[in-house]
Length: 160
Image (cartoon, rainbow, N blue to C red):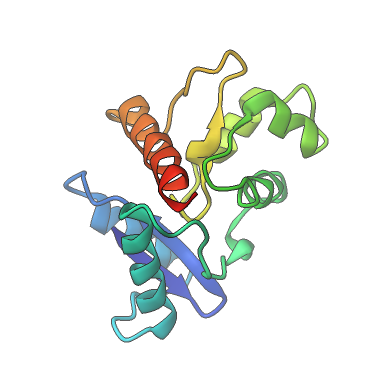
């Protein structure tokens, strides 16, 4: 995963599967006046937490998010999404209702689609009302989202 922060917190945590993901994420950060810092203690801590998450043991992250990068509605959606508990799920329509926009499930989906801080802001925990997982981050998105949800369910069982 690529991790980039600004002086105000985490800007990007993204998978590096796509050939241009690194350049895209660095462009995203540069547009916000941030640069990658190899010696950042907070990014080193987040990297360790992500390793633990993927090993099935971490359920929360200590990273501070730079919320200034978002438009108001997107920030509201992502801030609520960030509070969805490990291995829990919420539907797009429930999330829309909780942020005060009960008819805006599609707009909630669009806000989640542009989430630059994957895993840390757990948009994979937002599912369709019928229980299907829905999309995530492009190619193989339903498969990746399913894998993340299954990882969390197995981690929950291991810690019980």
